[in-house]
Image 1 (cartoon, each protein chain N blue to C red):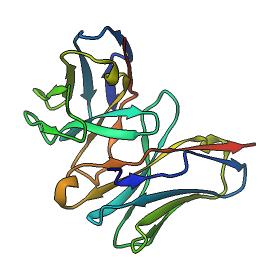
Image 2: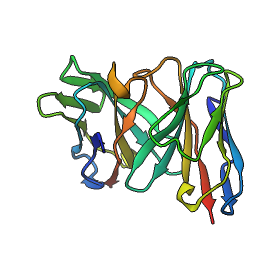
Image 3: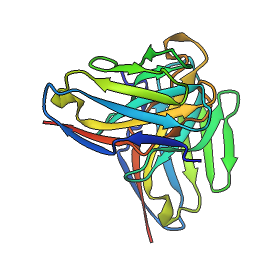
Image 4: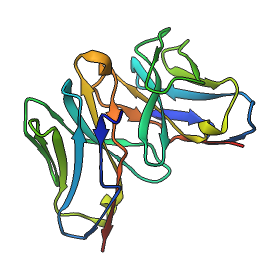
Length: 115
Length: 113
């Protein structure tokens, strides 16, 4: 039962263009969403997050959009840079229910930004 | 300030052998977690701890045991390793529970033959 899904295993983008990474979830108890970035041979690092009371959060080149009715969130990177090439994980947490106290991760999307 | 460290970085085991993975954090975090990462599966929570002396099961706890005798350390044990436990293991810690930011270690690559 994959409660957080990233249906695109990989994404290739040209430097300077926009990268859009998508994430869908099924658990209506999720109320906080995070994106983590992972380089090879390193652990994931936190990138940006959003609470369910918002529909957008922006931090520099990174913006996360949340559509609660569609149970969908997306991460926009503008402009994309070669250093953004990494695996991006979407994660969600819930204030209650069986998912309380835990982060549930998606499968990850490999982003490649070409110079 | 080393953050989260994991020992060892790599290990190869034979089926049936046992081993312990060590995670240490120097940020005085209450919460600690063990995840495994497998291709196409993302990160899956094995066990976690909400404070010294506590442990709880995550999503995929079978075949693993954990202990949190000291606040800064979280040990993951495999009593009888199986090929299905071949994976990359990540430890993480956070000041509070989710959605507090989790800080991850560099990972341990384990191969069970």
